[in-house]
Amino acid sequence: MAIRRAMSGRIMDRTAVVGARYMSSWWRSVQPAPKDPILGVTEAFLADQSPDKVNVGVGAYRDDNGKPVVLECVREAERRIAGNLNMEYLPMGGSVKMVEETLKLAYGENSELIKEKRIAAVQALSGTGACRLFADFQKRFCPDSQIYIPVPTWANHHNIWRDAQVPQKTYHYYHPESKGLDFAAMIDDIKNAPNGSFFLLHACAHNPTGVDPSEEQWREISHHIKAKGHFAFFDMAYQGFASGDPEKDAKAIRIFLEDGHHIGIAQSYAKNMGLYSQRVGCLSVLCEDEKQAVAVKSQLQQLARPMYSNPPVHGALIVSTILSDPDLKKQWLKEVKVMADRIIGMRTALRGNLEKLGSPLSWQHITNQIGMFCYSGLTPEQVDRLTNEFHIYMTRNGRISMAGVTTGNVEYLANAIHEVTK
Image 1: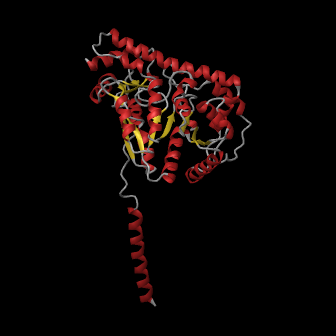
Image 2: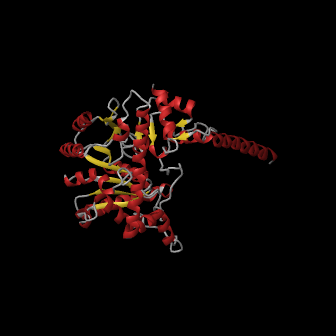
Image 3: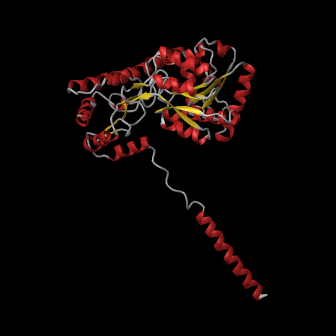
């Protein structure tokens, strides 16, 4: 009996050792993820003790004092919501009222497509969540398809479609020499892509370049995409924020609708309502008829269920309260124009200061581009000099967040850029 107990004890000891070995090795192979380039810029800026430091890397609006902004229409909507909110789940498709108002912004206030109930739409976790939900939908129902993404694009686009396991290809977009649109090459890529390919398009205020096609160019893009039977998916993160006019900023989408495309749209209220942390957006897919729209929406909801089950309510209530009230919506339109106009004004000021310094380079692209970002044309080495010598922080691709430019720092920024580009 004693021998049996001793043997049993040794076996248990060995089992415990083996078990501990496995448990301790589960995550041994995990290496730290690479730092996000944009968040890394912010971390370096915060650590800098210089009183002259400037952050033009962050993709969030700032007022002319460099401070974050909460719109007055948002404050008023929150006052109306306060005390009237229960904590019940939203449906998997989100707030019906928010989705209805959001579709009007993209498809038009009196859109026949909305009246015919041809649009499958769900509330999403801002624009990122809308893109990811669509990428998973694409993978599930078009498993052999691929997505064409512009060069360059918002870096997270690549992450989203990669993690959804959708193969990616790229198409020409930015022309470094002119600092504008490489239109001819873009059209060639659309023509040469296999019939029925998916194309990711920025509806307005292209990130990171700020380069948008003209209305005539959008019409030609639409023509060639339709001729090839491609599917156009629009990421519209800046409606209203680009020009100050949400209708003008939706022009590309309206052109595609006029031409009879069945499109998809990711919408976000991070930039145009300043609801960055609320993560409120919408994914919509235009279908052949109401029956197809019902089916597509049901599948989008089924994809959302194991991801996050249902979206959050607070941001959706803010949006629906603002857009469904004529006075609040009017106030929002006024405030979003103020934001857009400040950005446009800073573009003019930055270009003017550079030209006043006698720079031999052309800075016309600063005012030709639109939206939050200016693709400056600065090299990584020049960006490094700006950081090391002048305490100016931006991503190494030379993307300047115009939201970080103020009347108080624009002259200093221009002087520094002039020094590193001489």
